[in-house]
Length: 356
Image (cartoon, rainbow, N blue to C red; front, top):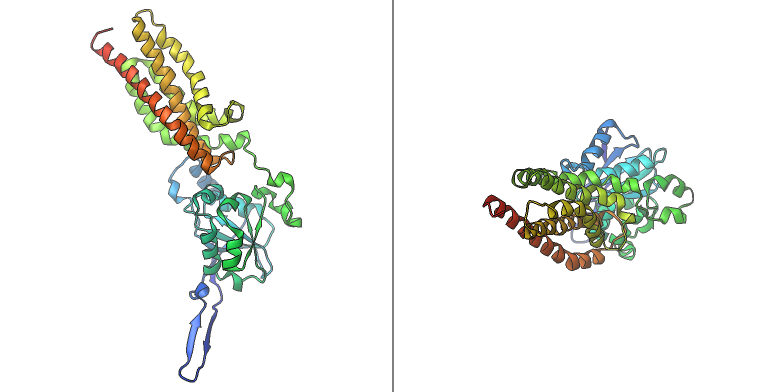
């Protein structure tokens, strides 16, 4: 259950020889609501997490930005910054079970801390705005906010200090390490290490697959009618390789760029289809060549393009690195897809016209 109260007002009046005047601190002119939360993850919360993982109503997985009371915090209790994405907020509050704390939720447009830091919504301006609009300086006696380490790229601590007089303390990468971290307020090397293990990669599959599932079914159905079940299977294989097999095998595919990793994986997936399409004894040599070319060009392009979607889900990549990769490889993917599609369409039209 959520309850609300308001922050104290900071208005003052002064008398002068001419006329009395009154004023309010802009940051707390309108008393700010303080919401109450707890550390319990309910079945409804878990259902929300499941829906978010599958991309269901993506814009609805948000909490209201502002200041939250966890437990029974005092003026000396720590303040934590969080994104207003439900999975981020719930991970933080559940990790703080047994602690009394304040949680300052930034308006990240329903995006997690890492992605929001890259996009600028978990940033200096938003953090300063929330500090001021919540009247935080009148609520706590200290001047320190614990910010997730993954939010550091979006925040300039000198600028926050200058504008709000609050110091930044960067907590550990994972919320589950907070209980240990709070004993000394010092992070061990393990707490600072960013990892992307198999489970973290696998849980990304549903949301990526859902985005392309419907187009995949449509294209596969059309190709089944025009070119047979093997062609339909090639479409499904390309999509599953790009959205499911790629994240699972990410660390084992050589090369550094996600695009080249995708091209390699797509090439491997395409080989069986190229053999089937390119060795039909009932077709002339040029038709077999066109069929093999279609598989070897289109499937790797689809897998590589899908692989690029995972660049924003890992700290293995950087914003500048991803931009360079896009400009370097997307044109190549486009050329491969177009040439391969033209070869496939030519082959299909020839069959419909009875040329082969």
